[in-house]
Image (cartoon, rainbow, N blue to C red; front, side, top):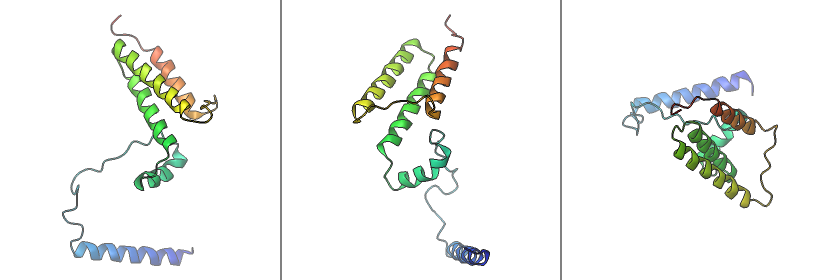
Length: 136
């Protein structure tokens, strides 16, 4: 589209917003005056975040995306766990989820060494192993 068309669309949108403000349509909205709740989508590749947001808002997030989010949450919980018994429980939970994900697919998930997500997990686990234990 040419610049003049964008300018016209922008002007129409601004006029509609101003009219809604003048009519009080933005008053007493849920969450008014509260900070926005920002969703952590760092686990979604940057180039897919907009598509993820659109799918999520429409209630159509693919199962694989939800599984990856859950796996990421389990890895973070494991990474931040100080208690040895709790760490073991988190590791078992992570292992169980990977097993469940693989069992639900026709072909098991093969984590490719070139996969950025795989590299991120390996780096986290490697760094976790280098953390000094406070109990020792």
